[in-house]
Image (cartoon, rainbow, N blue to C red; front, side, top):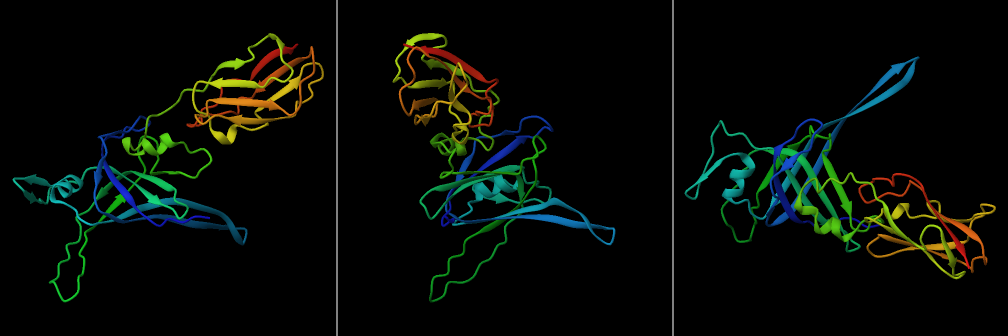
Length: 295
């Protein structure tokens, strides 16, 4: 088990559009310096219905979600952006009519195993930070600003938070490198496809010691690359061929290596089920069967 021990790379991204049932639109994320802490408190409301002299049903609803950010510094230009104030001529001007903008906050936290957890809170507004000042004494007392925001579900998709763990079985480096590009990333609704196989469909004269390879159009969700989704059957009686699966680093090529040589002059079927998914969770459109015959 690993726990979180660090915080870095705090970003904000202004939310410019959040249409119900549509796609939220954000400005380019901007990094804030001096991350100290980020405390998320998702409040929930729960109540129990009693009937027939006992608890009958329990209902839970998501309440107010608060985020308290503690930073080494909260510059005046950044305060103007986060709180809807005006910054002109090196002067921050606060007005009673100022309205904080909707925005997203992202960051990453280091875990004890050396891996990172990535986070985005999708839609929230900050309130003016508490201003605490004191004179300097004999010892150093750092006075770092804290700012609190209230976050809600997006109208577009009801999402309020997303995470990615670097040590998750389905994690790929591209998730981390692109995490702070956008709070929603690039939506992927395209199903993966098999672009080619080795041997090809209806191939004959295949070597009895051959392996079978499936090539895919995009990276696969590693947890779906299983013996239940990739297998080879003997065509005459449907018996399963014993073997092992492997996948390349890009997760676009799956290889089946038989435990022992295949039968000579024998027909086989290499099968993939539509339970195979890409990283976004899109499934293969249909089951796939590739037939081949050994030499």
